[in-house]
Image (cartoon, rainbow, N blue to C red; front, side):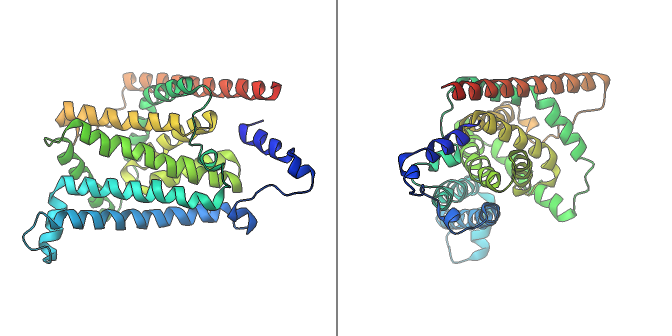
Length: 325
């Protein structure tokens, strides 16, 4: 029995329920609105909101850097050329749409006192164990991620999508190879995405899908949407695999905190490596098909399976302990 099922059982045995008084229900449950429909609509709303908020912030900041803010050509050029303006706008969009606004929409899907539980925004009983397992999973899973990237290289990409990806890579390369502090880069590229994206995808979206379908289908769909949301077909499969890792960690720990730590670590390693070795920032690191790399891939698969199985066994022990108590 999971923690949520145990909580539901506890609610059903409260004196109010025994006396015939219905337990509190969320707005969406009262009105019979499908959880999956609200979750899907919210992803679309967040995507639009993210771009609008980011664009407004960039425009306001860029206006202070040009002589004539009413000149749209100058303003757009300033927005595209000033990396700090672009990343502040991007970060602002994530914080407002993925985090703050998602906390508000959760008011519709959960009742008072259970909103953090709905998002799994809580510390698991063995937080250090799950954080350690999360870090280990991202470490030993790198050969699998690299292999997914190699497979992804055979996926045909429309020209306009390739150009968009090239622009994003160029922007990221310029930012990471500039004199920007590594701490500023970690904030924009590692910390904010780790917190905001986990709240949205593993917190709200996956949980809402679980209310309408089974847990494993919710895991797969949320991982796919997480990957598609980034509009990067060239990284579709690796990001989907990372989404599966993050979702599995969340399900087994019943918390998004270990996933946030794993997400942050994954992005932070990229930032630190790119700042330390600038040539890596713009370099595609797809593995060659050699005997050595095949052995590394097999070892990575075995180690990844081992970490996943360890988390599975630990979760079973926790559920057995909950039943006993």
